[in-house]
Every structure is written in structure tokens, then in C-alpha cells.
Amino acid sequence: MTTLYGYWRSSAAYRLRIALNLKGVGYGQVAVNLKDGEQHGEAWRAIQPQGLVPVLEHGQDRFLQSPAILEWIDETWPEPALLPADAAGRCRVRGWASVIACDIHPVQNLRILKAIAQDLGQGPEGMKAWAQRWMQSGLESLETMVAAHERSTPFLYADRPGMSEVYLVPQMYNARRWEVDVSNCPTLVAADEAARALPAFAEAAPEAQPDAE
Amino acid sequence: MTTLYGYWRSSAAYRLRIALNLKGVGYGQVAVNLKDGEQHGEAWRAIQPQGLVPVLEHGQDRFLQSPAILEWIDETWPEPALLPADAAGRCRVRGWASVIACDIHPVQNLRILKAIAQDLGQGPEGMKAWAQRWMQSGLESLETMVAAHERSTPFLYADRPGMSEVYLVPQMYNARRWEVDVSNCPTLVAADEAARALPAFAEAAPEAQPDAE
Image (cartoon, rainbow over all chains, first blue to last red; front, top):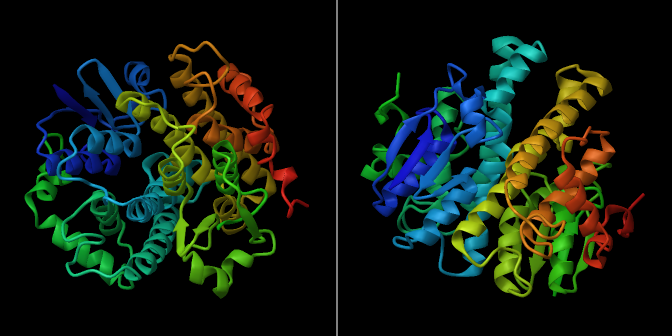
């Protein structure tokens, strides 16, 4: 029995939904309402001390942090593989994933944007400018990295979607939501569109989740 | 031939130095002077489009992003293993690493602190408060997670240092530098101290690097 504790708009939860769908793993979902602040309550902090989602429950285990859970999913259900078969290829794909996981997403997630708007007094406009700034520069750097890799399909590394698209699609969703200029990122835009046309991605979309508002 | 492009005070470069030392891998170092802005120059951006360090060069390959490079190091030189032998253990350790790699370090690294101080007008004091806030809350959450794991030595997961300490020690270095209150993190403090007493960690310390000022 596999249960995903998440939130429809959380991009880290979105990553896990895509990965589980690509593997064909059935899972239940429990929503933690980030909009209502449920993540700050004692009950949720007893499960995830940071007050963040997602958490993946599998049998007696509860796993935290999407980058770790994605590796676990790929190890537990090896087919289809999310990572390349060779170590250099894996390093390249994990590096692209890290650009999103470590340098783009964390500085534009909910808690940081709230702090920028409220605690640092930048207001809604300042918050939007902050989100756009780091997303645009981060995605443009990622575009430069991936454009250097040869490809025969729109997907970033292989002829089918893998770990790169698991991270890319939720980040591009955020970019659209915040009206980020991605005109300099044609490779990323093409990979995102091709991936979203597939059922594993379409069924993982925020708007397709039971808790979507 | 393995060459680390880094900077003495970069915690991501510090992680790689520790990992290479733990594996007993010899490597050369090339300094990219972050203080002088060398990372923003065209020459460096041709290597790392984000303008970040570290980069690891190995033969004809150049790898980016420390979380990806650490996995590559562990795959390329398997002994001693940095990750547990079982999938659930690996997920736990990678999760702890991600708390640092994704939720603590990225919001207090050089480019973000500069933006907070200068672009958002918070000045040196506001910058320090920002750094302290996310480091303290992040480390306290990590303390809660690791304290739930039983141990017989000061190290976080196994009876010797591994991936957890590779991420922890550079983050605790930053915490000391920014005078973060870590009094609620006794498990992390003990692991950091035990690790730093070992040659692999001592030789990786920022002050022990050729470019230290």
C-alpha cells in the first residue's frame, strides 16, 4: 500500500505523482492543505518536522524529501528506468535535476515567497519579481546546459521522458503560474509540452488532483 | 586525472572535497574566486552556465552540481560506501541530505544573501537575520529527523561518516560563520565534531585549502 501525502499545487508532490505514474504504481493520496496552513500543525509536523510536503508512505515506512523519494522509487520499481544506464549519463541528468531541485525551486517556494512579501515588506509585486527573477535565470542556465546535449526527440536526455522531465514539468507549471519569460528556453518548452501530452504526466497535473480548487 | 574547480568557502565544493578524501581519491584543485566575481565571467559561464561552483573534471568529462557529483563519486569509487546498503536506508540518508541541499543551503548561499542585502534593501543586518532564520529552523527540523534514528556512535546513520556527514559538516561550518544558534541540535553538533576530528574532513576544511584567505 503506497500513499502520497501532498498538495495539488506542490511541485515536489507533482514530481512524485509523475514518477509513480511512469512506473505504473498505484497509490492513494492524502491532501495536506498548504493554503489553510495545515502543514504547520502539530499533527503534520510529527510526520514531517519541516512542515513540508510530500511524504510517501509505503508499508511501515514513511519517506521524506522528494529528491530522495524519487531515487527510492527508481530503485524499488526499476522499469522503466528514470535514470540513464551509465554513470556519466546519470550524473548529467541528476545535475539538471539539481538545478531545479536546489537552485530554482527552493528560492521560489511558498514559505520563501511569503517571507519576501510579508516579513521583508516587498508585497505581492516584490514577491512576483523575486519568483520570476530566479526562475528565469535558473531556467535559462538549464537551457544552456541541456541544449549542449544531442537529442533525436523533444525529451531532454533519452527518447522517452525520465528524471529530467519529472523535475522539469512541475517547474514549468510554476513558471507559467508566475508568468515567467521562457522565450529563451525553447528546448525546455518543447520537452515540457511533449511530456505533458503523455497520460503519466497529464494524470499527475495539479488540476487533475482530487484536492484541486 | 580528477580536478575540482571550487572555492575554499563554497560549501558545495567542501562537500566534494570531503567525499573525495573519504574515498582516498587524489585530485587537483583550481580556484574560482567567488569574492572577486570570477564566477560571473564569460570564461567560467562557458563551463558552468549558472555561474556557480563546483565543477568536477574527470578525464574528458566535466560534471556540474554537487548532489549529482556526490552520487557519481559514490558509484565510481564504491568503497567505502557513502550510502547505506538498503533502499530504505538510502532514502533516509538522501532525505537528510536534501534537507540541507534543497531547503537550507540554497536560501542562504552567496547570490541569495547578496540579493537580500542589496536588491531588497535589507542591508548587512537583514542579510544576517535571513541566513540565521533558515539555517536555524532547517537544522532544528533535521535534528528532529535524525534524533528519531537509533545510533551507537556520534555519526548520524552508520558507525562511520557517510553522505549525511558530507552534507552536514559544510552546513555547520556556515552555521558557525553566521553565528546560528544550534543549541537545540545536539545530535548534529556531536556528529559534526566527530567527523571534523577525522583526517578526511580536516583536510577538506576551508581554511586548509590553497586559496584560503
